[in-house]
Image (cartoon, rainbow, N blue to C red; front, side):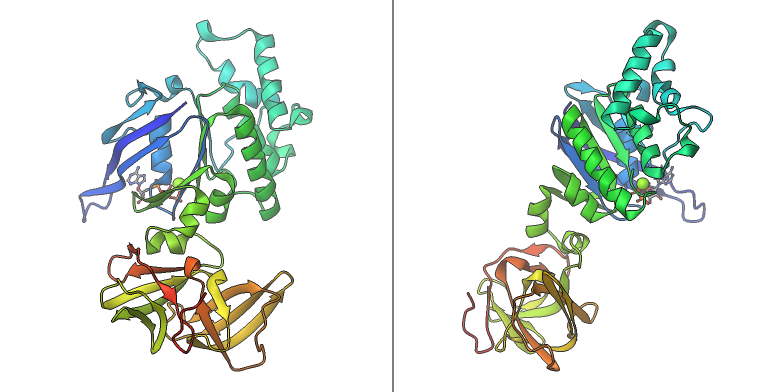
Length: 377
Ligand SMILES: Nc1ncnc2c1ncn2[C@@H]1O[C@H](COP(=O)(O)OP(=O)(O)OP(=O)(O)O)[C@@H](O)[C@H]1O
Ligand SMILES: [Mg+2]
């Protein structure tokens, strides 16, 4: 089922009486979610992820805008009639019911004339349990299960109604690291198997990147960028998105452009003939640093961490936002790990320029330079 969110805005009255006014939780959110895809809604706490999800499922109604499932305008349709399955961070299972009863609950709860025969409900509950691989736990109570198993019950309960749309709000946050990993793979498998259009909310960029066909990055109610996870990582539209995706995070330097060259401190690190003179911000991914004896950026070498396949070089530079640079280089890259200084040049595809004032990406041809000013391959 294709979902269209047409210029959705949600305003709440501000509870803080002194300040009054309104809180804009979601601001002109415009998005088409293609049929059968899994969309990751990603952003920091308070950016409006849950509010958006709640408007799709009908728990909240938008102040402005319309929501369509396929061609049907569902903006004013009640949640029960939308055909959505919802899974929350707290699994919200009924503790006194068995797993089977919990999964069957949405079917039993239907109006009398829509209720299926008992055997049919049991069959559907077992089918949903099989899909999430808990068919051997149907007689247990929730308290007798692990967090990951309980979350599977919650997913089965959302799937049993054969929803048109599946909505998951931080479904993995209560699980430990290992369970998070296996459960997210499980969600991906279930989504592929059922082909249900799914929206997955998380503030964990790695989780969103790994599971989604497309991600939507939000900040303060606004969509900052949407697209394929790898494309967003490789081509961030602004500094916010660049910083939000990737671990270790992108390295951010205060810089300036002068006569077609980009300087970090005194070091000329790039030729960028089309960039106007003035302050700007340079972002370099950890894997974008090349240690080399004639690299333009001289840094104080702090630590070298060998991690098998990769080596992490920790270095210090005054113009770095956090003071400390963290790079990832291949373990076969040669450099003097005992020296006090390490020099870097930058890989062009891993280096981005941003407007110092707005944080918007500056798209310009930029060629890294080596210490003697020659263009670097
Ligand atoms: N019922 C409400 N009344 C007033 N303000 C609200 C209400 N619900 C949410 N907000 C505000 O709207 C903004 C978005 O909230 P929302 O819960 O959608 O964020 P979120 O991205 O899901 O955050 P988190 O990651 O912490 O769950 C926040 O500033 C929040 O305080
Ligand atoms: Mg939330």
